[in-house]
Image (tube, rainbow, N blue to C red; front, top):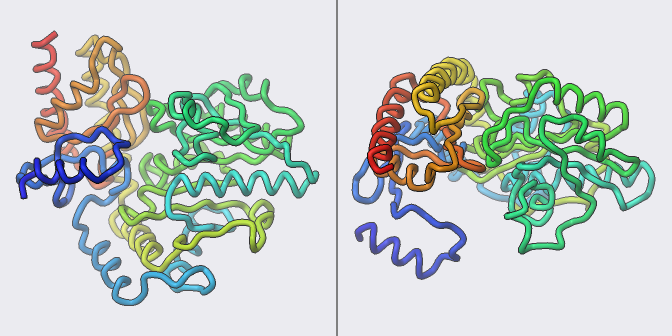
Length: 402
């Protein structure tokens, strides 16, 4: 069956919540994807920052396959071996004390919100607590996660959302302080905003937030769903700043393709949730946690974080040079292998990305007019050179049409 027929069948049956590219992906190998027509694509999207080790990693694949033959699911009425060890390793890596496994990032955010509210409830018995989130943030599509997502276009049709959420300006501590009152129970943010446009936090902003939360007994929640798991050159983005959260959410590269998320918390906060407060049927199942263990093994074995720092620095240099050459590329920002090029609003970014993909390079957009680059963490300088060759060819073609 050719790609057109696959697309026709999909369009007849899938709920139309995505405007998909007219491509049917069939397989992956290393840092490349291949469609059903045999076309090869250099992947600088990694399934939206998911496939940290690229496609077809033998160790990862064998680990998941072996677990399929042992046990996939039991429910959380029982313990299972992979979850036990995945939990221990993530607790040690994060320096936090307790973990709850979910099926996705948005579920991790839901759990973090519930934890914050229960923690505050136990202090004063009130149910009118408030959460401060950030403008231009993105935390997920479920009702709770959407409530703390600072983008009106995602929220408007689904109101009323959960109440008691206020939005501050990212990297502006005075904006946050202006919203704090005796009802504030948590402040939630991404150390590096992803969907909002690849905005890294300023070090002083996170430091001041930590001090504010300590002073007021407010929980500091870091959403590391996209920026975590090595993408910035540290296992967790907050480690670049030396500012530790009270609660942290993870997903995406945590399972490298197997759907899994988690939220972690320090002991004094985590103990607010007791049996009956929160649960999940699939979360923490043996298959998902075997994937997590394989991911953590690979981080240890393959010196991935050093590669992210090295290649990320090289990619940033290439982008800075491009910014200096092209007046319609206004800036470059990001950390490690989470980077973005900011285009002038006169540029039709959707059209440009279409050209890039047609030439065999996968990239995505992020808030405003930002081209987002979140490749597998195993890419090399040569992969960056190949990416730049395709990007420059696409820009040249676009310029000829302007």
